[in-house]
Image (tube, rainbow, N blue to C red):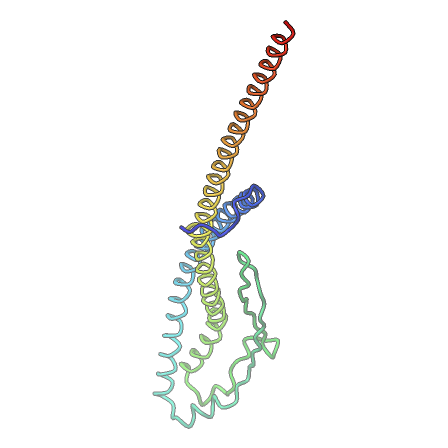
Length: 231
């Protein structure tokens, strides 16, 4: 806790009190934001875990079907079948705002209107496992995009949580204590100055009173002397 280097005046005291009020209000808002971010991050992590497990399960099935197809088909047939993809995909990037954090939203469009038109080969010379692998890969692709968006969102939220946490700590452990300590110091200095002024005023009053008494005594003595001389 360190005191700010300021002049101990009433104007500065008023300014620091206003800053302290703003800092306390900002601290509460930052804490509320941090808590809400943590709540949303934990919920997102839970959904991310469920989706990742589902994607991994589907991808395992895709790899298994590809492995079986590769076992029953020659490498040349496999390469020829997959050499020229029939369906293309374009990714569109959108944004959504989560607690002042812009997170990505992915969407995609296929090059043809029929999204099921995905097989770039004839069925006579290929295995059914290859068909299953490609079909399952087409099914899991939207989930993969969603998973990528969720993981990016989680990373951005985690970064914002850390920033907000640092700001909360800076306000709670540095700025607010420093302002309170400085306000306390200025109040003490002003009270000390006030007591000093009162002491000086009392001394001046005593001196004026003593001078008035002395003058009164001198006037009385002069009047008595004048009276004595006349009589």
